[in-house]
Length: 296
Image 1 (tube, one colour):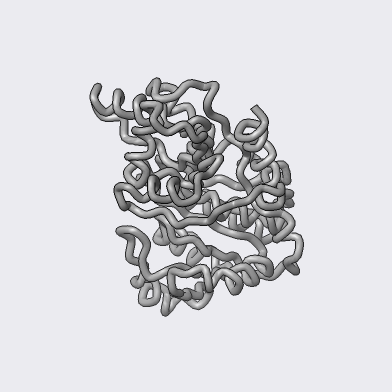
Image 2: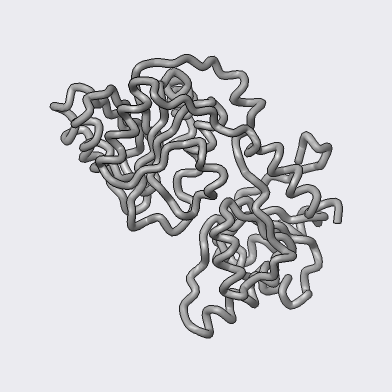
């Protein structure tokens, strides 16, 4: 938006009941953009907008399908999403969930094609090492990943946080201490570590993204997909119905340990030459968003 010569006011959202109203009175914005919509954090704003008491256009990304529940919950969803003029999605499946719930009209939502900032990734020096790397922390199935790599013997680097949400990953150090081909690094849950992870991803043979089977109800794993696209790296990832099929056809999707082993072997011995598509990017997503947010 800033590159598009638009003045952007950066503010951190919080759960304060009247925080949005405070910001509106302070800045009098022409448009409100919420990059990751948490309904609870914006409940008052969305209600006032739905009632027509706030007239500022509101655009937002919705990352997860909201709980449907019974009749009252469905009516609440339909009411509260009237408070958003334009709703963007990371996945066609998530968008379809809301349309099926009748919480949203199709005319007010699109999947813009969010992806990597290719200008940023093009500045990274990329090489092809002999190791695979996992850098994620959200709902990761490290047990399956470790079992597969222990059987194959291919080098694997795991970089993750000590914990994320309800998941505690500190067990990985003890679990892998006697597995010579697997190296584990537990780092602080901070963006300060991204540069080092990026350097290691850029030098890897492939990226890997193991996801818990019982947590595949949203677009979990998308950041790793964007890293693979930006760095033009092969990717092995747990099959997730919330990843759009046309986007995933350039990657190896797996479910069982046996499929993991087969995919590792094929990439390890250069039997798969993948070229991740470049049609998904931050610029493409913004161009599609801009046409709705600012040009209608």
